[in-house]
Image (cartoon, rainbow, N blue to C red; front, side):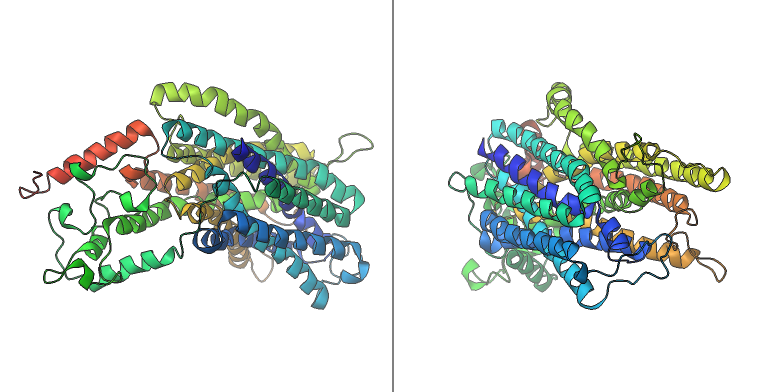
Length: 570
């Protein structure tokens, strides 16, 4: 059960802390630090993008030098220090610009500069550094408690990823309701302080199970073997690849050296046909022995296959960037949409605009268990796959659904602005709930499917790094959002008027057109994903669906026997 404690405890509390900061950060940057709306939106997207980009650093340090436990512990305290510094700045007036209403008096408001801006960004990026290096290790460390090569454990592994996502939803839900309410009614200083407390509880959860973990030791730099393959392949680029793959150095594709499917040992990877130019790194020189060539001139088939796996997953990874660009809008401009709408529920209670993002997570805390207990067993009987549908199918479903989130957002924003300008009516904030609900459903498919896909395609010593690529997709998505906002403003601005998103007042902007642009990009991205997911093929040694692994391996073996007449086995 320790794996589920890891997945639920630390994941929920860390997400609770970071989500409370990230989801209401645009309000703090605009109203307290007095940055313009477009700059505030970019601060949020750059912050979230940095969090997820730094996950690569966390994955690298974990796999190569520190191990997942020590990486989580060290950077957990870094994140905690950032929360504390944010809370201190929000509490002390001398560390912030003078109070001012950015909507009515925006021109006269003093923007945070100098040491005030320095403290703000230092605290923000301490949180980013800590959270970024922590995130991939939470998932991979919990999953490491399972034995991937055991078919029974493989089923539990799929359940674990759903449990981890359920914990993510719980953390987000509490952050977007309780903590955002605290920030709105008790002040951002108290809100940031509660985030720090949540992070501290998460670290206690981590430390409490330290004597029970199955800790996998770091394997040394994961980049050196990859560099060796490229150097060796380039050095031997003029060599002719043998027609018989058995002649490649370290090849296991034969009956005498049969490798069972679901092996996670890098030394047991079977040869595949893609990226054949890299196979030249495995060609022995004809006039020498293996010992006469260094590891920078002669690599094993397994080493080459590791590089092939990494190259193969990049197109899948890239297809989720637009998806996360959509997510960026729900945490920035959609929050401002809510601020321009009627937030009153009763005479005495108003819903904080950032709390609207809790709606999909309220839905998901019911849908995720239903997916695991009802849909997966049903789909498993039809497909015969441990996870019901494959991770790639799950990602594709999510990418398709995400398009309709932006369609809904565009339609409602048009209606909101028309009502405000033409009829002087203020729509209820719940009109924008559908865009959050639709995206929440799509995220359940895409986020969990992508994490499961990357982890199951990883090898011993690569789990945290490949899992970090999932989070890196979030990073590029948020950075792309910042770039799109800047480009759209530049392209659509003229001498007589500003761009679609250049004003602090959404009634003067054209946010609906920006949403339509994202809907079109999302649909194009979905068809692009269909192509790459069809192109992708699993390495038989890493197929965690038992029957699929046997089928692919059998096909791979049979093709290797048919390579040429010289390929005979005595």
